[in-house]
Amino acid sequence: MLDALTVAVAVTALALAAWCGFAAYRDQPTKDWHFIGMAVVSVLALAQLLVGIVQLARGERPDQGMTIFIAYLIGAFASVPAAGFLSLSERTRWGSVTVAAGAVVLAVLEVRLYDIWGN
Amino acid sequence: MSDTDRTGAPASRAPERDAPRQKQQFELGSGPGRVLVWFYGVFTVAAASRSVVEMVLDFGRAPLAYVLSAVAAVVYGFITYSLVRGGETARRAALVCCAAELAGVLVVGTWTRLEPSAFPDSTVWSEFGMGYLFIPVILPVTGMIWLRRARKA
Image 1 (cartoon, rainbow over the protein chains, first blue to last red):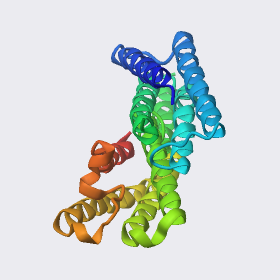
Image 2 (image 1 turned 180 degrees about the horizontal axis):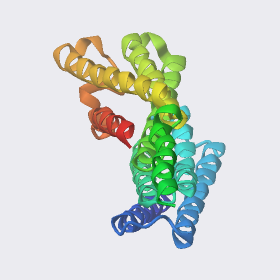
Image 3 (image 1 turned 180 degrees about the vertical axis):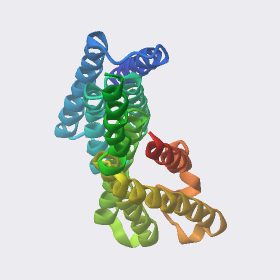
C-alpha cells in the first residue's frame, strides 16, 4: 500500500472529525463546507481503494489476507459518505456528531488497513 | 366570547395531550438516536462481515468464537432496524436487545478471561470488546439510556 496515502486519509479524517465535532460543540448542523470536507476525504479514500485494487492486480499480497483487505478498503471508502447521508436528514448538532464519529471510524480503519497490508 | 374561549381551549388542548398515546410511531433514530443508528450500523456491518469471512475461510479453527460473532451481528442488526423503525414496540424490542447485548458482552468477556482455550480466535465481544475500543460495552449502556429517555420525549 501507499503509506503516504494511508497517512493522508487518516489525517484528513481526523481533521474532519475535529471540524464536525467543533460544529456539534457550537450546536450547529453540518453545512455546505462540511460536505466539501467530506467529499475531499471520500475522494482520498476512493483513491486508496483504487490503488489497493491495482496493487492486488499487480500481484502484491497483503500480509493478513486478501478478503479482509478488500473488505476494509470498501468499509473505509463507504464510512464517511454513509455518515454524510445520515447527517443530511438530521439537521441538528447530532448530524455533526454522526459525521465526526464516521470520520473517527475511518481513521481507525486506516490503522487496521496499515496492519493488514504489512510491509 | 369568553365562553367560547373557555370551552374552546380545553377542547383544542385535549387531542394534543392524547396525541403521543395514540400516535405510536415516534422516532427513535433522530437527534442523539442518529448517532446510535450510525454506530449500530457500523457494528452490524463489522460483526456480520467478520463472522461471514471467518466462517467461510476456516470455520473449524474457532467455531464457538465465530458463531458468537454471528450472534452479535444479528443482535446489532435488529437494534439498528428497531431504531430506524421507531414506535413503542420497536423501542421495547430494542431495549430487550440492548440488555441482551450488554449481558452478552459481559458473559463473553468474562468467559474469554477465565477460559482462553475455548477461544483460539477472538470474537467481537472478547475481552469486553477491547479490540473495538470497548465500544461494544459502551454502546448498549448509551442505547438503553437513550431508549428510556425517548419514551418521555
